Image (cartoon, rainbow, N blue to C red; front, side, top):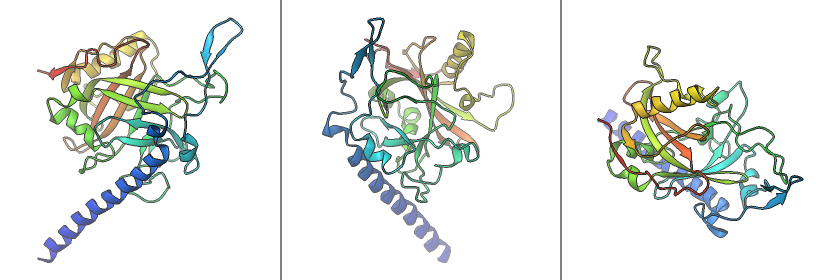
Length: 283
């Protein structure tokens, strides 16, 4: 009876802590509040200049309300959103090599201890590192942006990603990921979803988390084809050399060191975002 009561108490505390975390994240979302100006999905005409060659270039200026988040934590590098899911969070990045990708595993945006952690970009990535007010990036964006989040049982953080492999019709109605940097808005269309054992060091091993850039076209297609070979559901989204990749990674209990990973590629200029976004089970 004592063990039962303790277990019930621990379960209750888990869900209560998750509830408090969701309330906190909701308050942060209100501060970011893209709906006060326009939704994350709506396109805008970005500010531009004409360079010496007569070409029009976009200026890097902070998106509205980004400063609200930077005043809380200067590690904020963007915002991620998948409509009709709980995924609507600030993206943090702590670049200290000493802590690597462990820093935000158990901290929220306020740097308070939090079991659910935060959504964070791999510490090695470059994502719109710019000189504000100019059209220049100080460093090119990494070709494969890897973002991590915990797989929470209440579907918060990256917990809802499991629906892409557990529900046959979920992908077809949720194929787009909206990712903002602090300066620009981007759309990505999902093309693959896999389960991988990161402890595997045998021949089939796939170290997806250690590929931030691609040496050449061959390395790019080796990576993409490995995803398409392993994906739980097959999509009709084409991926071409030069496309920027977005990788969302969370835990999975299939293996002791299992990961569920969702891959998307940047929507191209003038492209229909949902073209090819239908799926079937991979036989």
